[in-house]
Image 1: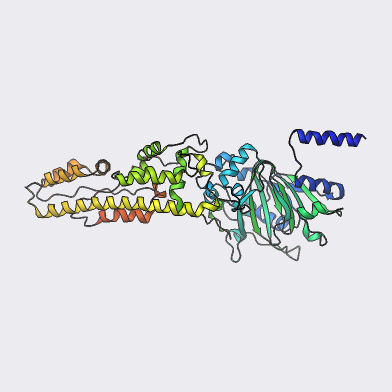
Image 2 (image 1 turned 180 degrees about the vertical axis):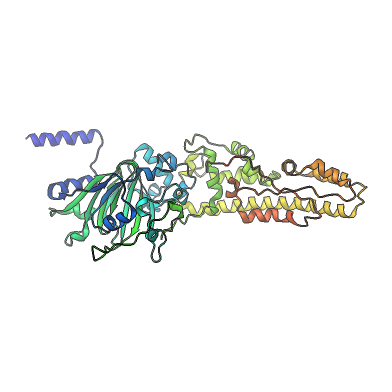
Length: 509
């Protein structure tokens, strides 16, 4: 009777607080009743790469390593808000998601929001780590063998994935690879793992369905453990793995299987290499995200003040913001009615994806796999039209300068050359005159025109640094716009877009 009373009380408590037991928890309860939990070897300090390769990596048992100092070397605290700073986040999707079901077609940004609210989802986010994050992740010391970093055959590093599990989201128990090892490292939160060696069991397949449906489980050796931020667990090939994420972010390295030498006296070669970051490492599977086609969507993400996302815009305030954005205005010499309409109406409507007449962070949650192609096509078309206007305006300026050059060659130097130059400068757009004045001494130019042999004003060419505007115009486009100004240098006075080298780099992209 006391057992029944306890069951009723506990059952009622679960109903009152809305708690439901997860599949991982149910499986672990069954394993505890009939199985044998094995201890996991742990390292407080990581072994040297040679020792790790020969003594632990080739073994068929899991182990844990504390790598906090290495994982947090560049980023001291990995958080959902930190990852939300990356403007490419809305365009990454879990490889487990279903694009045919809108409520399950969620982007990376949606998963980060779910972590903030501790909301359990149907499946975790798992996909390749964005290239923008890899320069903040060092090559782990246990893998610093030159034979791994510079392989002569198949790459040792197969894949690097980001795993996000809001709330009690689970990765179902199953064998995920027969030919690759995996190293799971917690960045944030405390994921829970259960592991079983499938290679030692031929009669029963270790997966969620069979472990819950079998009337009676045989005696199974299993491992059960939690990770803390900065801790990693190594899972050999052929192991079945199940994860309850417990509102966590993790990295998972998928690594080439290496067979243990047949003789204990034989050692695998490992020549220690220097420190580097993962963006310098060749993985068999790379991040194929192409930002060019959706450059405008990525660029205007910063307008919303990530990671707080406390700003929003109407069509009018959005256009005012663009006009005051130096990275945009330096490319536009004159705001024509057509260009204003393109920015203020066409572009704004594309950014307002939820059609609420506001541009806010809510619009980026509407980016889904199902509409990604349409977004690519529309944004690319708008970007091409903006490029067209910019090129046309610079070509028009070049024509004016060419006409003046012809006048200058044919007229008497003691005549009205100064008046002609003043007239040309007066007709230039204000923004061009301002930038031209920054790079060329106009007063000196006018003075030199009076001489019978006028000297060309000195041009200390400055190499324009890459800035955020490069997301709108790539180098080839910049060359197309500016190339015409670099012709006939001995005869012409030319104008070039100017970027102040003393201005600090933008860091919010």
